[in-house]
Length: 295
Image (cartoon, rainbow, N blue to C red; front, side):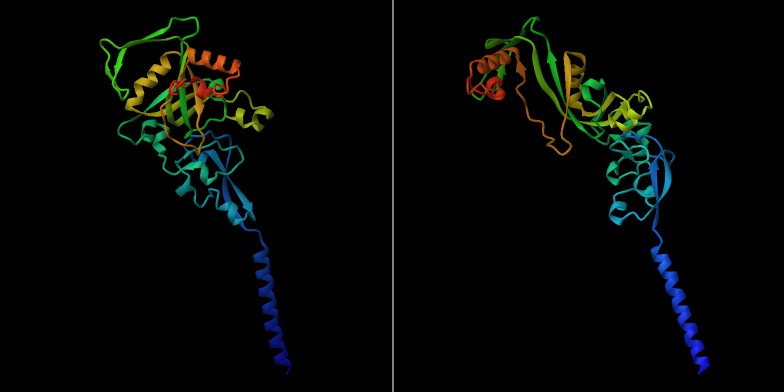
């Protein structure tokens, strides 16, 4: 009988020991290796291991981990890929911040980032006041050109004759000569894709710059824009004539490029007097200044 108790006691002891071991194992925090940025990584940078250090993180929930690039999936999901937004120092890389279709060769040869046979990239010098601090690669922009001033001579268009449908059929003789007084502003280039941004080095490493994302990566100096053959000459004209303004499109907005009317000096004067006279129809800028609307 005594032997039976000893055997039962031994079995119970083993069960307790196994239970304690399993409890300890399951209660231990789950550790995951996560790459975090050593320093500030601007958008458009091709990711390399040297930019990161490995941090052992414990008890991170699966939903959060599923949004990060971990050390285990680094080679497949991040290495040699370009970032679509800035990565702050000390932060992991979110999967949404990596362009899965980017080529590592684009870092040294940006033309490799353009796959269309009729596509180019063109460099547009900009100042911080023109684009601000928050513009990013893969944003899309529109260009507005303004030519002349109220003190310069008017622009005279050649005679034109149109058919009943409004199409120009003769520009050599007859017709009506149009004179448009400057200044003139026109939305002339739409929906251009930014494929890279050059920024200056941060002004300083002060605590203010480190906490302000607008200052941490330096001022924007150049935009690299993807264009097609038909856009090259127009864009060259914009860059070499008049003044330009840059508008950034909504990230999830329309990519359409509908024609616009532009604004002339006469349009502005008409709008001015319409609102000054409390004209109900003239109160809305589009109704007041659009040449496509009957006055």
